[in-house]
Length: 286
Ligand SMILES: [Zn+2]
View 1: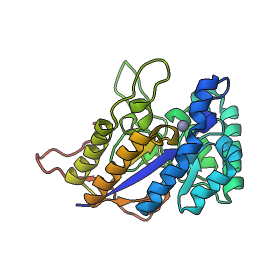
View 2: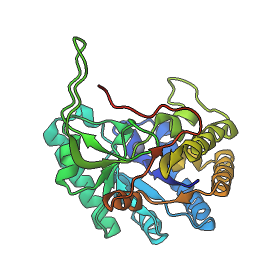
View 3: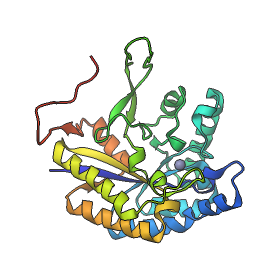
């Protein structure tokens, strides 16, 4: 029984509230910089390498803190410049802000990012081409699997008149995510609703997603998404530390996402479904 867990952190800070964030929301965003050293210390304590998705705006606002992340051995990858919603941009605007983000992160951190996570997991029809043009190897914004990296398809066709037609695979690798493994919707409130769920219960859900992977998948990989302004608060940080300790005890390996991507490119077949019970396997449409 083996498996990989990617701990990932989206260091959105002010970028997530721009333009026009209220003073209250901007102060919550500012708390991200308080949470980062706490999370870095937790990761250092357990000797866990992680991946941080850093908007260019955050890299330019907090260059020293971002360099601390790299110096601690973590990967830094793209997350827009000012946390733009790609689907609301023209292709030209999206190309310009993504390149701006790439240059800011590469300039501040002195290394070229290999991956990207679209802000709010929002993609436009142009996003995959733009990420590929920049030479990125992977994206981490889609949800079509939970335990297996896959190559993103291009030109899927969906209609209410007939079956969906799936397009060809691109060269861009997807390391999938899920809203159910993201701390933001579980814990935060945007004034539209009240999440603020109990940290023990939320992280119990996350632990069980890892446990199921270890039970029914060979060499699966799962991605957990957190934000320093969310999980950096005391009760969540203690819950997160308990989670890390528990899944460590289960025997998982913690990896940066670029390490997983390198493994796939080298031929490693992550996430083969091998159910403990039953005879049904996974099937594509058709
Ligand atoms: Zn974000």
